[in-house]
Image 1 (spheres, rainbow, N blue to C red):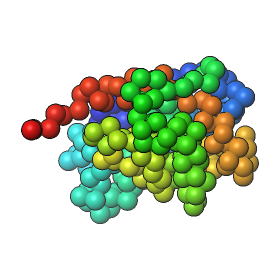
Image 2: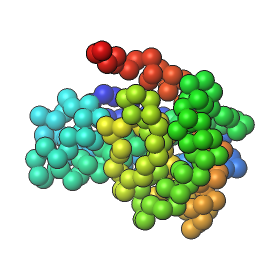
Image 3: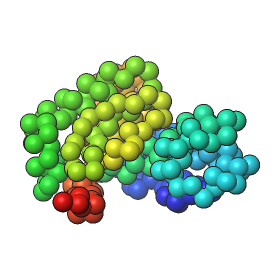
Image 4: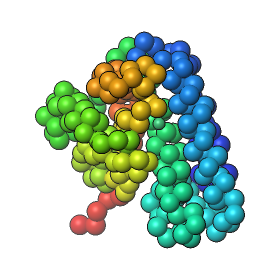
Length: 213
Ligand code: MN
């Protein structure tokens, strides 16, 4: 992902038919090539006429949109969020057999939730409890403490550090599961890239700023 304007659509990190049977080919084509592309295009259009924000990294746009001029404020909130969230969503799924967390992430899940099953249950409750469109997240604080949160529309949990997110907009599942958000959640859960997330989390702990004693 580019760090600032102009943003371009990153390729889907795996083949369109490689998340079958959980996530269908048509869903990935529409979700990645159409919906994600639209967020990228809309964000670029909004920033086109506002050079002051063209060097803002994506993470700054999604957090500091309230300080932007009023005519683009809400648009940047929605579309920068759409770009940020979808980039991470596609990158945190993977083809292949069901995986599981390892190393420090596995330890932290047990510490903060009790077990992987309890984390799943908390995430599912967040995913099903999000009224309308939005996201359910596993996020970390600066010290590695994990929590589950949900956000409406394209909002993010930043400044908490997002690790994993389930897209509960209907466009993420309607072609495959129609109104059955719970069935989609179960399928999405089987495609989570735990080896990748375990590496991300270990790096986050390594790089965290040390507190002054
Ligand atoms: Mn989506």
